Image (cartoon, rainbow, N blue to C red; front, top):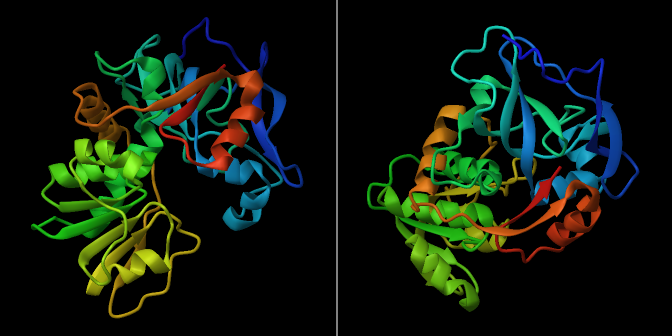
Length: 309
């Protein structure tokens, strides 16, 4: 069913952030509010995170790398409330608090907008105890970490090095890996040691060569990360377009994060319970998106910046 009072493309327009080929920063466009189709949900956005991949696409460099059209919407993470349900959607109600991952890079409207449409299967309810705005920091980073660890299989007491262990993906990876039985070391700066230990990892500032059964390279260190893997071990990259070449019998894989509402629901619940630390660097209105994108592109952020439509 569709909520009768929900905005529609025909009667309302909204602001949305888009990336256009040849323009080095995000652009605000006036677009129609999307209408949910079969199996889809219209979400009124409360908050949406800005990730490094957003800044990469908005810089213009990502269009060729990801094979994107000249104009695309921006934003992966969204938290908000259900505004309307497309035909055939069960399990959600208008007004419910939800979060989701918008993983269609070619979509003309994504999470950095006042309203966005996602498949119902990409959404999860935001549990009690988790702030709805802060929930926007979770989907992309937590799902990437979880799906990357899936590629490595059961821990079996093996050792794992997580590079960028104090970053958004790395921090989740350390916590999830430690909870599932890995012997986790986190490559991080001394200033981030307390956070990494709190997540369940041993802190290393310079990894020993060929000393880990597996490496999850969230910092995209490539050669440095590969050197830390033992012969015949495993390496997982978070950059699918350009994983490093295999060497010394090391199995190299790359995580291609995909929306998964059921898995996201589990991760949100673990965040609400304090098992996964929620970190927000700051919030800003959508009108100040360019400044936020610059901060994120500059790196060094702890937690995610959130845009508020």
